[in-house]
Image: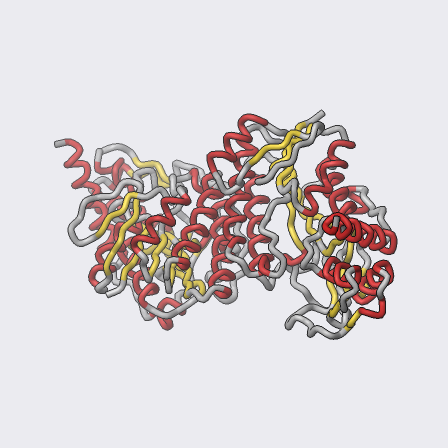
Length: 305
Length: 305
């Protein structure tokens, strides 16, 4: 039984990581600004920007493992927000306190936005794709990665970095693509979208969280893409959502313009995840979408009752 | 008259930047953990790791210009120290507060350790040399640079980054090469050194500070090497120190081993500094060394009296 400190435990991926961590036999210490009550998990209320509070908690809990999922994630705004600067500092501070308090192995959340987004035909590979982020968010994550890796090498810490691609599932922020389409259609309103020609690597949030837990429990170090390895056109996703929501006729594919500079295709090379970590996703897209739309329907029912 | 906030104002380069900033007509707000009293300069006591205190000071002073020279600088230890992580966070926090409080242009201190140190024949060029730091210190500085540049681009801030090479002059930390040789010889003790075959780009600290002030007062953005552009073998420097100190016979050149992995040559391309910033150093090496040794002699005299 080893102690894991999980940050971002109320967030989209973090909240789905609790179950697999418990199943793997860990003692889970979940960190959040707004902790829940839960018998099996020890919740800690913590602002990761409060330097003294971070050190206090780490010194008290003394976890051997760290899974750091917290970051600024306001939909749309996170790409360019100045909060990215604070999260670089908070992450490096957390990592230092973790190690100074006896931490042994850390897994941190990175992003496909660290890669140069090149021609549609190439997969994003941890070994071969240039790291040349186009956004402040990607730059801040990559900078954190590089300092964390150099620090781990000098200070006897095992460090792995999971790069998240595109994900969906219950609990996603309502402004994002799948929820906005699902919620409009479930309410009988038209759902305007782009033409959906973009090819993306999509993974169910439960598989993303499972991939991170598998990475934590492995001895792999360095960067690992946490993704499906399969590119699908977003209009296929949108179509599945429309059918699961029951109002495909209200879908307005192409009513919104593409975001300028939007890359054609972003798909992961998943050799490291499959072979070295030994993890493969288990939620098929059609089933995952159906389940997610059901979840949004239940949220709607709950908010009406 | 524009307000400049100068951090690291008690440090090696920072302390030499005060005079040129005043001469250029700026209102100088000097920040240090241990401020001095000085009529012309407004000193502020500040711990840059104290997030609230940083915002308070910036909101009160509201400087238009920032010259950020503070960083962890313990001789020898700074290459791998975990304090580097804290300074990434503190620097990004400072930059964000500066801009949020009306800041317009910032100049930050970088390092030649951000470059890949390649074959002896190539100059370190801002445009052409790969950025591939070999140390935690260089990695932390480069990461700060990259996030700062991306932030400045998104948030309407002018940002320049001065890369410091090798420097010497009054006030250098006594454990470092020139002071250790000078102090041994001035005290009539033997001075052991390496063979001094390493070629380095050396600049007097007054010129380094002057180069930073010139960069601040220019409109150049991006990275600029603050260096002489000339490589000299360290044994030439050591020789000058030995003769100025009056005991060349006590010099033990070659008595110490080279640090493993020490690069043969590190010399800057200074085209940007000369042409775009319009700055050239004014202290010749021989005169600079003689002056510095005199300063150490006066320190010795003072500590004896």
